[in-house]
Image 1: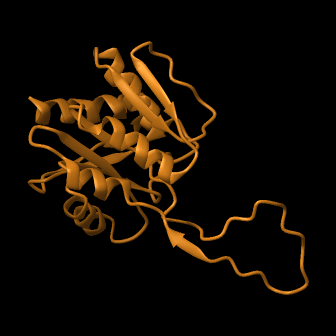
Image 2: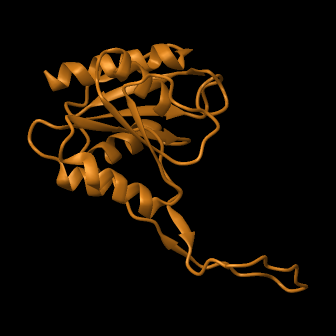
Amino acid sequence: MGYALAEELAARGAHVILVSGPVSIKPVHENIELRAVHTAQEMLASCLAVFEQTDGAILAAAVADYRPKSPAGHKIKRQTSDLMVHLEPNPDIAATLGQKKQKGQILAGFALETDNELSNAQDKLVRKNFDFIVLNSLKDEGSGFNTDTNKVTLIGKDNKISPFELKTKARVAADIINYFEKLLH
């Protein structure tokens, strides 16, 4: 969804800074400036470097919540005993940007939920200081990952809930950007 959102914004004349981890697709529109990152720490740093100068941000995909505490610099050979991997939290990019959000900026996020979908998304909306959140459900066939379609529900700070039908990701992106623009103006 992130690339579809970037393309929709760029097509409407916005200069878009797309911070992205490794993916198999590339942005097409000339108004999209790609900032490629590989770790959550790099993503946070890249977002913080530009966030103050933006009208807002849409956080369409989250990095992993945890990372290995002590990454091996070499191949770990098979052992006969169990292997323990200790994890530590990655930075919470959404919460960090939510704390730094300035008056007039719009901050939106996504919630991919599998249970208590609506209440979990509403909780995340408040905790991250989002202006709206896009709820995805893995229960909806044809939505989520590895498909060119999606079905979302937009939830505003006013708790207004706007469900949408299954559509192409490009059409979903247009719906999300329409909502974003209403809040911006």
